[in-house]
Length: 136
Ligand SMILES: [Zn+2]
Image (cartoon, rainbow, N blue to C red):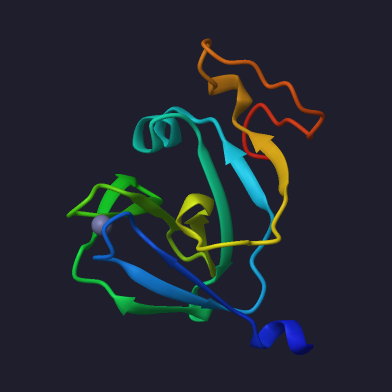
């Protein structure tokens, strides 16, 4: 409970057919190198996140969900193709593509996950913690 929780972050897809607000703080960004994130994002997934109940859609005519596994679905814009969400079944939080956030986010990138699945065409050259799979 502090003033930060009155903060509103705005976000959208490339074309604007999906727009949303996030109330309160977003979590630091985690880069996911799993093969699904690599395919859907075009490189690797950089996700922030927030409680699902902190999200409000102001435009969702483009929003579509793809069931990417038994336990999760991915939200994207069906008009421009932007990858936007990773929504794990029964989770209280929604992973939100960091690239969809407007303006200055003040977020930092915290770690890399699923590095065992990363592509062989790039190296990780920072000092952030790396996890071969999902950290327990
Ligand atoms: Zn769009």
